[in-house]
Length: 165
Image (cartoon, rainbow, N blue to C red; front, side):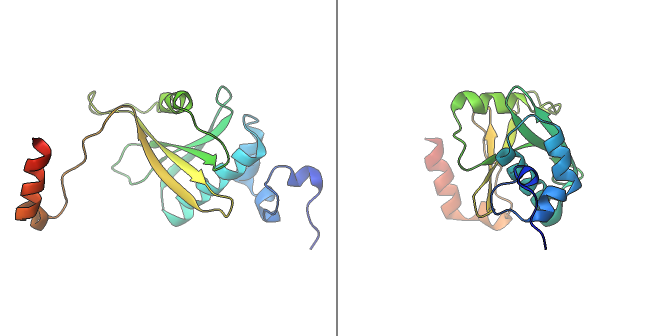
């Protein structure tokens, strides 16, 4: 099989599969013309992971010319509001200021005005491994344990009492 031309392979990172640069969603991301090819490649990998591996719904491709990124918006489950996902290659540094700009991309209405804005930062390693971090604007109190057995556990109660002191 013939390898893609150098112009075509410029849209993907070195060593990427040729089918990726021909994929309609990859072409759609490149057509946004808001990010460099490595960021678009990371966005494509995250897009495929969300749809094919994690079974997310209504994943939409968006772009920000101010931040020079392609980002995604989708629903993890049908009853959960859409989330903003920021794909980024592991080689791109991330400052506090940049994270604050990411948090402003979350344009979904919050149910509770006291809840913190959040986005998912999807960091893509060179071997295509993806790690997701939930970034919030401020501190977020964790949800209580799902297991009733844990709530009744004396050790859990002691730990809770110690943390409240």
